[in-house]
Structure formats: structure tokens, C-alpha cells
Image 1 (cartoon, rainbow, N blue to C red):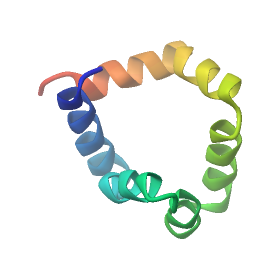
Image 2 (tube, rainbow, N blue to C red):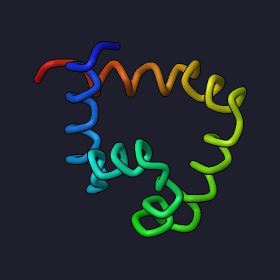
Image 3 (cartoon, rainbow, N blue to C red):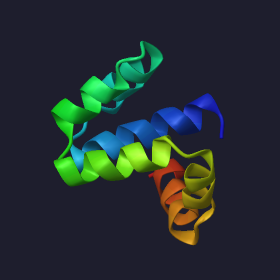
Length: 79
């Protein structure tokens, strides 16, 4: 996935979820992702994301799932 695809995916994700994806990216880059997640997502979503982010194996398994691959495909397709 190149930067252009990533930008398209972020824009689509923001439109579909209402989450400020650029803000999340900046929070991750500055080491403040936990604060961002706690302030912008539900408790259940926060728990799920933290579980995936804390385990390389869980993240790889999630990204390898057919659902994740399909979502990435849909988010990166030109409209």
C-alpha cells in the first residue's frame, strides 16, 4: 500500500466512522495514541483496539483476515 492509497483509506474511514483519522495518525506519531483512543472511541472499541495493538500476532491475524483484506480493498478503490 502506498501513501496515496493510505490517504484514500484514511479519508474514507473518517467519512464512514466520524473518527478524525488524521488526528489519530498524529497522536500515534507523537506517542499520544492512548489519549486519542480514550477520548474518541467507546470503551468497547478502545479495549478491542488496545488488545490488537498490544500483540503483533493479533494485529497480523486481523490484517490477514478476509474481512480486513476486503475492507482495505474497498477503502482503497477509486470512487
